[in-house]
Image 1: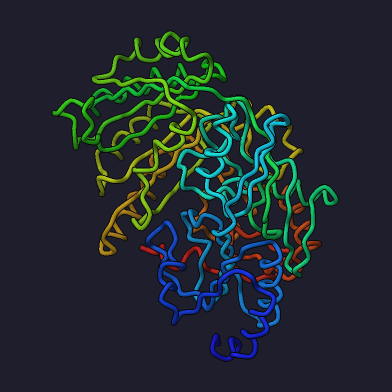
Image 2: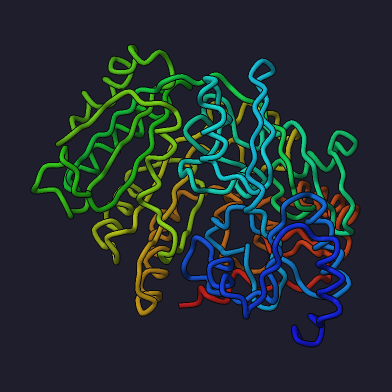
Length: 476
């Protein structure tokens, strides 16, 4: 199919109006350009259009439509489902578009569509400002923001999508629009994913963020049930200046970790205090004094340092499979199930992560954005990570079985950015019928042919077939 449409003449016409770089399968840079964060997804696009501007994105979309090829969009390439790349498709690659401009007086940042969170943090931190975002700095801003955006600042200030003030968007027909003239499009971009166009520039509200107090406590697995029972009581009472996350994982080889626990399954509770740093030790005391850890480490750091702490634990090229769900509560049987799943880890790189949400996340009226599930109390995620393709089956099964252990406390919905390997109809279920219908109406206006379907797709038509990009590598 690709050889029939990617003729020399068609490519020559495309190149005439394109200022970026076009990468074809025969080019030496092709393998590197098609690579995404999750090493499970080694797909082969027909062409990679590395765009340098919104005009380049427009040219690429016009070419795609004329050639009749499917299209994917790569911002940071960090989505666990590998939505940035597909066999036989044209990849619109925004990784050359990483400029950030900060207007500190107005507390606004203008960030281009290929930015990573590290690009944004590097620009905003010197001004004592930040936009709430995720917890791994090599995550792409675009995918995170369009799907929601949980992170360290979410309980205090809200989601990344809540800070999206405006956007420049290239639509499926190649036209470039500003959301100030399209308020319904801006509403959809705040949580509706990449369904409506290619965002080439984000206008983001910034918040004042100074140094933060960070403390982590480590518990051997035999003490995890008691520690989590206390965490459950503490979580709902913490102020919005506090954010505590838990992880069941294999302890690393850090100097502060006792030798007897290195390489062993443990519980880690990490508390971040966002108020005055000198108040941090007292603020977290009630968590760690009631449940004394076997080891602890604490220090004051910049927000940018905090954002980069998770980078080493999620390197590019490893194999990842994630299952996640919201929980209405964290009762004893769920705690027992999660601790048992940690004891049953199939890879020393995997983890079970959970945190109490709410705070400013659910202060935003539900109707103000497309993001679903604002009032969810907990999110729990089984993050399988391994190296050898021969181990795919057991690690995928472990992640699925871990979520089955907390099935007694499910809550409707799910975090859109974590969806992968889902049954038909799951996206509609996550958004809920009323929100999904509104999103589908907006989709029909801006992308009636479902050009942007390589995502957690919202179809403009009920008879639109599912494009099975998210399921092909994930079958055990």
